[in-house]
Image (tube, rainbow, N blue to C red; front, side, top):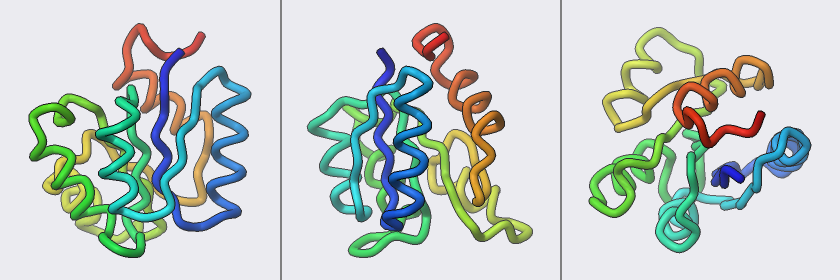
Length: 125
């Protein structure tokens, strides 16, 4: 079973997305701020990370940079989740080390497609 680390500070977004992912067969681990996201990336060894970019403590940009700078973690794919669908945001996310980018509100079929592409064979059927 693929393990998803969901780094999201908004409780409603977190609850909705985690339930929908669990129904699709993913194991979901939650972090509520950027620092906890980095810490749980180390302790939980997730298959993929869904990273909100607007987070307390350290933001998603910095959390992703720290994860991608760690040789033990840098192979974990990170998908940036952001409500900021401004020109240049996708490039900013990729420059920070994210492997893909998706906008809020989350469209689950689109997100699952991106997750599946990054996870390959370990994505739930």
